[in-house]
Structure formats: C-alpha cells, structure tokens
Image 1 (tube, rainbow, N blue to C red):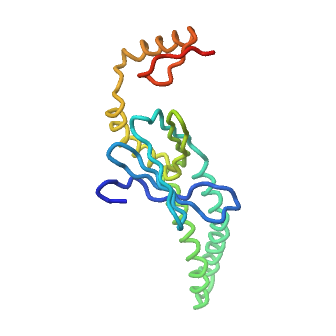
Image 2 (image 1 turned 90 degrees about the vertical axis):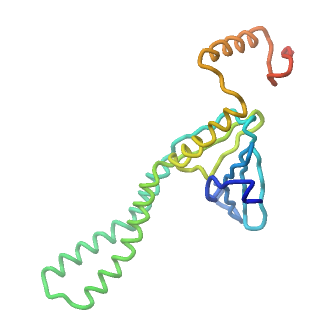
Image 3 (image 1 turned 180 degrees about the horizontal axis):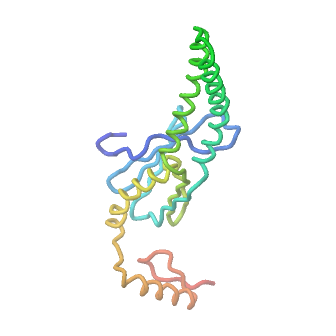
Length: 202
C-alpha cells in the first residue's frame, strides 16, 4: 500500500473474537482520497475493506465499561503491593534500617509502579467505546476506534469529507425530505436508490 495514497488514521488494534481464536487479527484504518480503508492483518495475510464516503450512512459510537473494568482488574495486583509497601515503610521507621529492607521495598515497588502506570494510562486515555460504520448493505465494527476521544477525533476529520461527497442538506430541507419519505411509505412506495424510480411493495 503506497504511503502517498493513504494516510494512517489509527494504529492497529486487536479485533474482538471468541476465546478460542488460533490467530489474533489486528485492525487499522487508513484515509484514502474518496474512501476509508480498513485493514485486518493476522500476521499471515491482510484483508482490505473500502468504505466510500458517498456510501457511508452513519457512524455510531457506544460507550462501554472498558476503562472501569480494566481499572478493577489492575487494582487486584495493585492493592497487595500497596499494603506491603506501607507496612514495610512503617516497620522501617520504627527500627534501624537494614540492607535487606531496601531490596524488599524495591522488589515490591517495581510491580507497584508498573501496575500504577498502566492504571493511570488507562484512565487518561478516556472512556472506552464500540464504533460501527453503517452503509446501505453492511454494518462494520471499527475495532481501532475503541476510545471515545480517538473516535471523535477521527469522525471530526471524516465529517467534512463525507459531506463533500454526499452533499449536505440545509436545516430547512430536512423536514421537507422527511415528509416526502413518510408520504412515499404510506402510499406503498420504497426508494432503494435516490436516482431510481420508486417500486411498489407487493
């Protein structure tokens, strides 16, 4: 894939799958001239999916408990490390400091620092989300947009491109279009393609 032709929007993220998956698949998003390119890579091959701006109907973001869940998981090893460090510091303050005391504190302090750093990183990255892209023929999950902040940044970049490809309705035109659609449906017509004549529901 030519770097000049595409710009990377997201880093590769793990695509959710079942518990018994032999090969992990990582997904990333790239910006093309007139479409969004999704790449799924499993280390042995790559699958490409193109979503043209003119075909995108909606992009939905649903918040998840991802951040809270990971913080609770990380709190499990963090709590005993914290307790041992506090007890060790109190014990050292009450008696003469020995060399072994330093090594004991270092031994517990390293995992405590690592887990605390992971928890802070997870918190600062913001709430998690599940993002889906909708077209007329499919709904595709975008695993690389798994944080609300990142998803909104990407959508802010895509919104003018989609509007330029599809055109943008003026606010006063929206009620008129909705009334036209409602009248067509009540009369028994369905329009699949805006440029095609309506067909009667059998």
